[in-house]
Amino acid sequence: MTLNFLCSPWNIFRFVLVMKFYQFVPKGMKMQEASPKDFFAFWSPFCKDFKDIWKREQQKLIKEKIKEAKKKQEEKVNKVQKMKKGEGGLVSKVI
Image: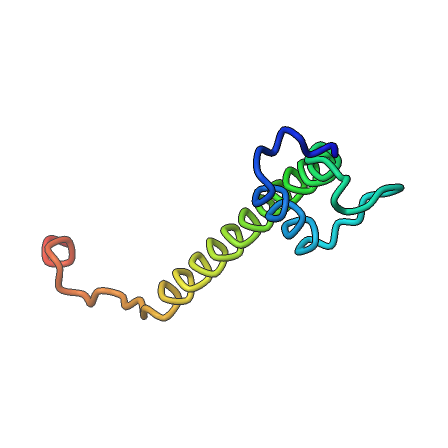
């Protein structure tokens, strides 16, 4: 059996359950004959790709939230009514 480095039958059983959970089917061998290197040869690149995609999506969400916050801030600024000061300041009294 190629899983001889997995010490106990319990570890072999758990590893087979993990492979079944992720629907991994080794090519040209039975599930019990598959070794972790067969599984992790596919799992590692998947994890890396998933992490990269996750980071990009999080950056997109952050940019969208920043845009929304800026838009709300501009709306608040535009709502403020600007009024001209009436005549009666010190300059108008001097002139």
